[in-house]
Image (cartoon, rainbow, N blue to C red; front, side, top):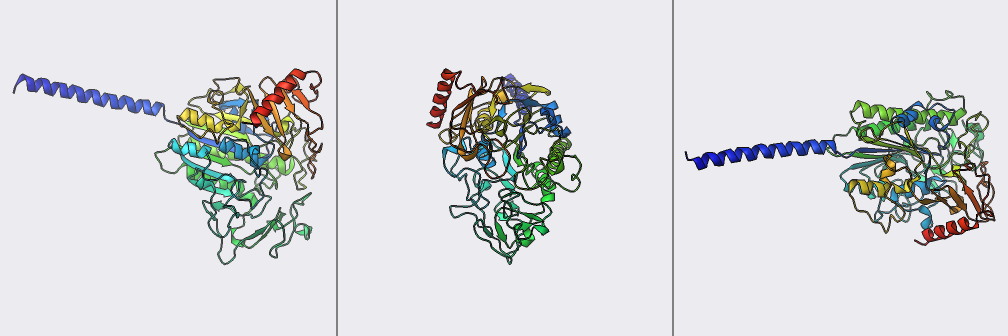
Length: 514
């Protein structure tokens, strides 16, 4: 054979070897830069001071371990002091107050997020993730005429970016008291259709108002309609007997569904929005947690929440997924004690302070309404045991994940989100310049990174008007505080700082006009 043939063969072998080496290197690089799984654990009514690592007296060892292995934020906020608006803003990147009808949704609300909206799960889908939502929804289901409980419940989560959905439609204290998987009520007997009304009584189920002797937890205000599982709810419900839930089983049911989703065979990373019902009323923990804390049902469901976190982390470890899973743990708003049931939350509070050193709580314009626990754990990227003072908002999850994953998003819809990725992973200790917070009745406040906080004048009540003993922060006069120097918001600086007041008002108006 000619020299030319051997030279050619040698070059071919060299090229083949180099090609294989390049492929192997690329594979190693891909493994090293593999996108993380993302687990957002979003709990309900958990106050800034409810977690032991934030100063709480109720043991929360599993949540504390998240902080020990991750990054604990001291200056993080939900976007509203009530649940529906916070959830809407986190999933859409838009403050909920920008349009009417996004306050606390009734149990029979139509879908608040429609299929044409930009959403966090849609961003994750476009980035190659399989997406799921498990737990409390409270963002409405169905078209303009509302949900069809006996048919296909859409639009819903599957129409806005989720591949899988297992939810309670609204809250545990609202009918219908059923689970919904993807588009249908779980276990519904078509011969026993569901009927729901929030105006007139339907069916023959007893109500808490008429038959308090049938209750295992007495209502205190507003929760005296249809009785299910010994608890009277908001609203009336008939039918659906085979589909009714048992409140005590929420935590285990959600953990089981999450386990199936996380361990599903797939080449894609997962994004799971896991929305627990704890600590929302009615506070009915599973029997194994009842009476374990000494703080009554509210303390017991905090222990149940902590167990839930522990079970999810244990699963990730067993599956070899912990190292490259980003866990974000937070709450939708601040704490409330009596929120409709006589569960001794106030009587048994002892020295525990759910609001920490802050003022107010759920519904309030004061800090405890929206400043919430926020912990991020990602062993592959974030050094554990650190604390961050960066100002972060849940509305920024859309922009942050879009930025990190190289995805474009509809900024005309997700108008309020920002790319806060450096803050989320501990590379930026300052965060946002400022953010808007929504209190009861869509009253807005503006807080800056330097600690100044404006509560504009309004004519709302001083206290929540229907039962909870919580200061709203509302006043007929403008208020100005510096929450860095005065976290309890005890010193009104409005008269002493007119220039700051003017700047804050101007900024808030500019954001509202955006």
